[in-house]
Each structure stands twice: as C-alpha cells, then as structure tokens.
View 1 (tube, helix red, strand yellow):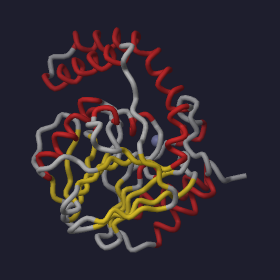
View 2: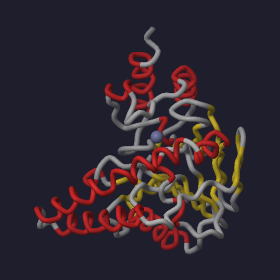
View 3: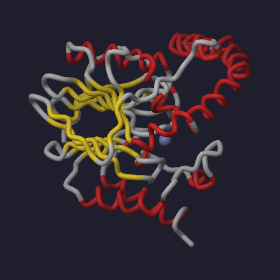
View 4: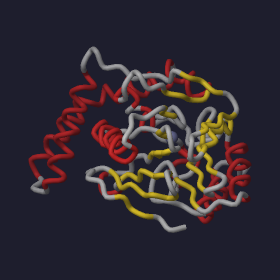
Length: 279
Ligand SMILES: [Zn+2]
C-alpha cells in the first residue's frame, strides 16, 4: 500500500493518506510519545477516531478535518477511556456527538475522573518544570510547544474545566455507512482496557487498533503505567490480536507510534505471552 503524506501545517502530527478517504493522524515523535488518531471521510460525512492529548494538537486535528473534508465532523469515536485519547473531547462542538462502547463510557465517572485529578494535582509542578525548559531553549518549535503547555496546565486548574463524556453508547458493533465508503466500529471486549474499540475497513485492508497496538513495546509496562494496568484482560487481548493477524490487512494503525504491519501485531502477541500470560 502506498501511503501519501498530506501537506498540513501542524507542530504535532503528520497526516497520512492510507487509501481514498482514510487518513491516519500520526503524532510527531519529536513532540513525545503521545497518541494517534484517525480521520475518515466517508463521502457525505466525516468521522474522527480518538482525540489527541495535547489540546493544541486536537485543535489542529479539528482544523485538519475542516480543511481536508470541507465539512464539520459528523461523529467522534473514543477507542478507550485513557486520558490521552479522550482529553480533546471537550474541544469539539457540542453539536457533534461522541460515541464509545459501554465499558469506555462507564469509566468517565471512575478512572477518567481519578486520572484527571492526578493530572491536575501535578499541574503546578509541571508549570515550574515547563517554565525552566522554556528559559533554556532557543528552538522556535520548542518555545511554541512549551508556551502551549503552560496555557494548557493553567486552563486545567480552572474551576470550569470539564471533560466531555460520550453521548452515544454502542454495544458490539456499529457500521457507519457513508456515500463513498463505510467503516465498522467494533467493540472487541476487555483487552488493553474495558471494551476496547477499533475501526475496521475490510475492503481497504486497514484497521485502526487504538491502544491494542503500539509500534514499540516496553517490558516495564508489565508492572502497569502510573497504577493503570497495560492489559486488563491479556487472554482476550491475545486472542483478538491473533484474529486480526489472520485477516487480510495491509496497514494496522497503532494507538502510539508510526504505522504498523503484521510484524508489530505478532510482536504484541509474543509480548502478551511473555509478560502477561506466562504463568
Ligand atoms: Zn491506552
């Protein structure tokens, strides 16, 4: 599959055209290991798969949808509840609904709220650290990044700051049928988190995997990340990855890192076997 990079001015990500109407938003690794997103132009409607942690990156994503598709997005899907994927929800117009699985939705009152409280508590320390970094750099891109970060940390501490939960809840699978192409939104059950959701284009041989797939893996994750387990249900996680490895797919879009192929899917299966299922 020939992947074409779309010209778009953003500090935070590159836009890859995978197949007509199907775009992978790949976070710029120089800006950290933050998450990816998807943009699906289905012909008459546009769908977004996940937001980006940095609000400025999500603002660029909203700008990208409008510039590429010439329309407002129809729907946003959250792949799972982790803060880096849902933090940008609030930046979208209230006229556009957000959809998730039940497992993701349920965490907005629980683990999302807890994670956000932790994040907010860290804000004053982060502000000091960012101010120091800002003083030391002369790189205009870094200066812009740190200035944006400072605005974000300050905004987050405000009393009116609220995360936006999904409006629509789906159970097993939903097909979004556009005039040019369709996408299958599938709840694969508990794996990396609760009711993880993927976006599957069988005809184009592309699957957006959310955080079921990382371009690179770290054995440290076996211990969890900041108290969050990396695999809630390792057995199902492995079975799902084995199933999608067998499918006729060319591109697997990971939740983090550059575009993947079957090689990284196999690595994930081996990683789960070695660090999570080896008992
Ligand atoms: Zn995650």
